[in-house]
Amino acid sequence: MPVIELNNISKYFGKFAAVKELSLVVEEGEFFGFIGPNGAGKSTTMNMILNFIKRNGGSVKLLGQDMPGADVVVKKKIGYVPSDVRFYPQLRVHDLIRYTLDFHHMKEDKQELEHYCELFEVDLKKKFGDLSLGNKKKVAVICAMIHHPELLILDEPTNGLDPLMHARLFRLMKEKQEQGTTVFLSSHNLKEVEDYCSKVAFIKAGHLIGVEDLTAINKNVKIITLKGENLPLDQMKTIGAELIKQGKNEARFSYEKELPLLFQTLSHMAHGLDDVTVDNRDLEEQFMSMYENQEAAR
Image (cartoon, rainbow, N blue to C red; front, side, top):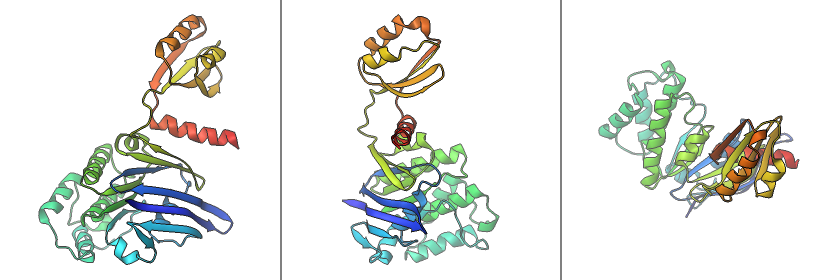
């Protein structure tokens, strides 16, 4: 069952199109990544999904319900972490968590709360306004998860977190997903997105430019980087390599045919090469390739 259904949603600020006719489906139980550069429209899209800002067109369904018609009912089932966390600064962390539970008509599970506080090293007695950026983000994560939501929407949740907390947060989100929670995440950390997400959508300048199923992506695609004064460009194309990018004395190819043929070709041209690198294609390479291809098509 689709948990998030976006159909041609748009948002204009004056004449500027922050998001334009974006359509996307996130299925129940998916760990879905939403990536793009700064200003691509990720936060704007999330704000439209949650009805924090009004869209200029299109439709949104969450958990099978039309938004904003089912706004109150649906939001009881959602946990949200904004990119910029702003809670009441004078309140202590424990009070903020209590208010979150009260809002969802839930009683505090002391064992669960202690687990979260130990995991993220959160001091319940501190005032929110006295916390660092990273600790504020950790409190927001706890508030988003403490009521056991069906859908988690997280906008750059790792901003301000150190590498240890990054890892703990992603492991926790993976646990939630395995328990049936749908996770919709925007992030700049492509390695973590690749390691944990089942699907990823790429957005640029308000336009959706592609969706990848990371469980089905071809692991046999190799990225070949050649350096030297006499690069065998024609020979590489002849054996089926696709030129991704070319610079001075350097070229990068994608290749998914037989490796012996590749190595045989390179061995005949070794005198003109200074360096050869063969890597598996990762999400970062796919991300850069899609963006560069879009730029080249303009």
